[in-house]
Image 1 (cartoon, rainbow, N blue to C red):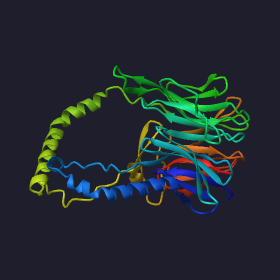
Image 2 (image 1 turned 90 degrees about the vertical axis):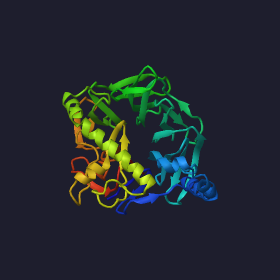
Image 3 (image 1 turned 180 degrees about the vertical axis):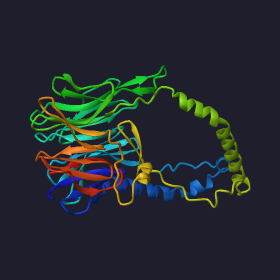
Image 4 (image 1 turned 120 degrees about the vertical axis):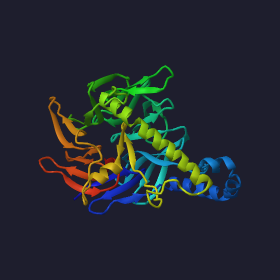
Length: 388
């Protein structure tokens, strides 16, 4: 099996080479931030202990650790060389773009600045130019480009929309395809709804934009243009977050209201009993259990409960984290639409005409005229990229 790929899972980067198991790639920059936070926490530990007051103890509040940092990998692309990987890192409100040499195990920083929240990297194979999505403070997202050297950030789109997942068009250094959804806001300016994702094509030189796929009932995601002119993408049913009022659920809420109110009152009194007497009012549940760590992920505006999916799966299986309605589709130059796989949340194109894709638990490879082949497994895989 001659394939090299990288994937993101639970904010971590993994490299998969041929028949070797996936290898965790650790960013020296991210590790330095973690180490600095540990040193700061140890240095300020006596202050945190002396700052414990009556109110936090009474209400059971946990003081946030000011030195804690949330480190996330938010973008992934092939590097300038076959043995290199490009990726985005976001640490709180600070972001950067880095290149990792998998042979020398060395990291090179291209860009690092405050307020830079980049995602969805794509590298132009001909000139090394990077395309990315920039997250804004108002929850919108714009497309931008970056020179191969890490200089010259140039925003390409603007407006009240979410522009994501840019991908370069082979053979045209100025063309990008990407997904875009409009934002609807309430009278206070808060996001009330997002429209369905459409696929757009952008000329980065002239700014001309063309709609390739759009439907009021469908989300079109992660577009990629193949060398033969075919367009690959994921399609899923569009579901507005602010749906209509369901009469059956309304009746159920009315019937269960007294029970839910009583449960809330008992839980409130039980909390105070634990605070002052350290004895619970409720003992029917047995001894206290360790809290279960929930595994969850947000994919293109949809919440995915990975724990629920894993529990529903049979032992020994690697279930899809998204439903079969998430379809990997190919549109040929003559307009024909073919479904290649179902339950797909990320994919990339191979030079031999095949595709690698993931259902969130496994990575598969397809070859023209052959059945999909499982390459490896992982937990909560969010993004997969072909290398080399």
